[in-house]
Length: 99
Image 1 (cartoon, one colour):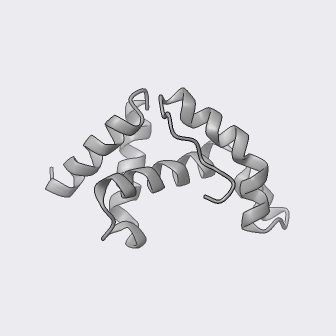
Image 2 (cartoon, helix red, strand yellow; image 1 turned 90 degrees about the vertical axis):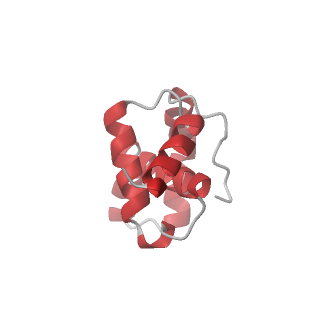
């Protein structure tokens, strides 16, 4: 395992201690594969990847986009659902309206 993968994995474990193993792998892979996260600090990469993953997989975000909502509106409408998913994973930080 690469040093960066381990560092992001540790950050993810601290951030979301109840994240299921298969979800952890998907979030970690996303953090490592995303060009926008390659130079981010491990903690930042873990957080941004976790939020993006939860938003796309566990909310109606993509359906809202497909229905013609802009990204900011879609994010607003799924915010409570997104934060509930994160809380279930043991995340203590919430996504705010400006995130």
